[in-house]
Length: 493
Image 1 (tube, rainbow, N blue to C red):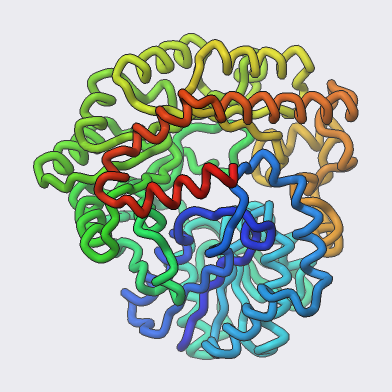
Image 2 (cartoon, helix red, strand yellow):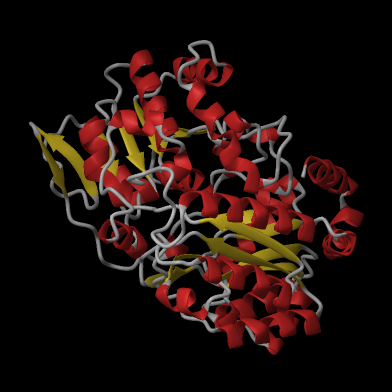
């Protein structure tokens, strides 16, 4: 059977730069291929060769353009998608879905059915896990939804369809229609051994040649997160790890094939397992791989010894979630960190000399003007090398989403038309103009615009720009083309 996995367009429609390849779909495709399905392809419709925007704080200003694209019959991206589906003529189509681009996923499913009406369409991803019932109720173009880990479930579903079998009850995590009812099979609770999975085969991307070497350097060393932040949809409460040898094999393969020297570990919290990271760093050093890399982690999961070893092994960027300058809000987020730990981490990052980014969030339920001002003041106090700030968006499946329902800010469900007539940052809000229950709408709008401008000015400081460039200087010396790419990005910012 021929399988086409599609990552729907979002940033590309808006003209924004979208880093990396869709690692989730490529991992799934590799698993399928490893289990005997030779004709598997990944179609990344969101890769943008001609992006001219990178300031993501201005993303919501462009959302009307996104919604308008669904009304344009001759929009080049939608025409391209239909043409690609015709060209590959798949027997089964898989589509990823995240809450922010749910409309694009639904529209891609509609296009798929217009080209191949009898081709089963399967959806998976974070929004699918949280809202499988809603997807199957509102979108007739979707036949199946897979919740949670997708590899084994999707393989079993393909086998069932291929053999014309009707019994779907044994497929863990599958949601489907049976008559007029939507039936949800139970999720598989056992841990998975990631070392038994082959690492992502990037050659399965149908547009493999258009990615930069840095884009191909995306790696997941683990899956899951042991923390329970109330705003986050990654609520696994457990982490599955790959071995350091398994990770090293992938790095060597990617470096040899694509010339990649700047890698990115996209784990939710890269340094959860200190022993694994220490072992990985020692092997990077002993194998003399001479790469540089960045990672996401938490302020309570680092220490000086580990950071210095990471730097020696090539780590040049660390990104951490700070979230709020208000201890009260931070506690309500159940972030599991304190301002004291944040300050200690900021001091430590400066001491060891590693570039670090702090992520902040405003507009959560129960937040006041005073809380928001504390956040911007805290940013200036801890002085990250780069700052990212975003306005909270309610994602289904999170504790804060449920809190929003209780505060009458959030509605539990959306209709099909809602997704195509609501700006993505307003999904599930009862009133798109109301962000929080404690701040008047006009006041919050003015405050968020002011803070976005202050953060832009903060990041554009010449010393910060130079520091960021210096952190990547080893990469630039080895590949000057990356310097040219980054300079273009900076000009667009």
